[in-house]
Image (cartoon, rainbow, N blue to C red; front, top):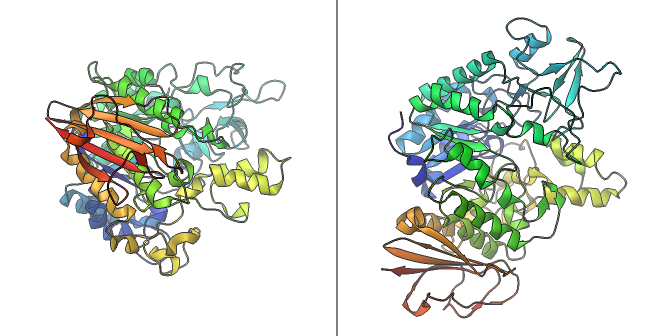
Length: 551
């Protein structure tokens, strides 16, 4: 049983295993490589690790199509390597959380194989439906990855639901036996010493009864019928009551399209929460609509509203999860920052979210300012969602325009190997890597930045160290200023001991800055900035500053 909310004082580092570090020389990232780099992660100031899936998988969706929940894939080193990493992390006072992916399994999972054969008790482990009398699909719902949400199975002679890839069959969480299986999985890892879970699209696990056609959504049909479904809270409460409440662990739920008000139904600490934190998507939507592939001009006001809505909406009731990058979105320097001003904008983006209230997550490579990847051929992409988009959406446009759309939207930009040094393969592997290395690895890599006191990497270390030292960041209130500005994000954090003013310019031009009323900069200490020289009333491109007043 948890005695304290330790996750509120942590900074987590997300590892996407395939592309982090190859430790055994086969071209694939693995746990041997992670073990080598535990001290590096700790040196950042990070004291928690979130692993994207490490389980056995056919790899259709890079590990999110799981074929065995209670093992570690051999390609990553197997269970022995995982236990070594887990022990190594704990010896360094670092927590470890796993990815829990229980909306769906791989169609190679034993449960699915037995379900399609109607072998009890697995017959109803998945969502099966016969074809309609007219031969049509069971309903008109869309998959978020590939076409419609139904696939015909020749063995069972029925359709199964797949909200993601065809090979990712949705589990029938309404079946109590399936929920018991989930609890077995949770206990297995928690008993081993894992400290919690990031729960993949967990808000999709309860579908509307009857699976009706959707005549509301113009696209992504069915979304309102499978997101925050009728029994979601009931099932999350069951997992919390029967498992999580008995361990010293944390739960972090991925929740597409969630609002602060809806999130509080699950994470309100004043009213029996069933989860600790939720991953919102609002801060990822300042340059797109609903999906990264619907690209739009970056809108700072939209981003600021998302930050403030969540800071204010959860104040005193729930705890924020803070992030600007993960494995599911293109690189932030290329989106909200500037590749022309890569270092300055990478540093500014770090400051923009690291001093908010919540638990920050840093995604691998973010700390050195890795940027988007621009392949010359769409078939160089690996991601199932990206390839489907290219071949099925906007096909009347020129190949060049369609490829450019992938440059803006593909999550494969976040999945190129981490750039450790300027040697061949960016120091990721001594063999040809499983995936392409970004062409800029000779200019952007860890080894070079370790030697540069002014690098993005060392700036991240300063930011995280400051964050942990300032009481107002952990406990203080939040106030946004300059709300109407389309260039500046300015906010304050304040408690009874101190206050800080955080200033972030999202502009390539010089921008005038005047401190808000009540903030006398002459009495403040400038504790962090990303340009040398004295601070003036004009902000340089992508400049950021943090001012401190002690009370």
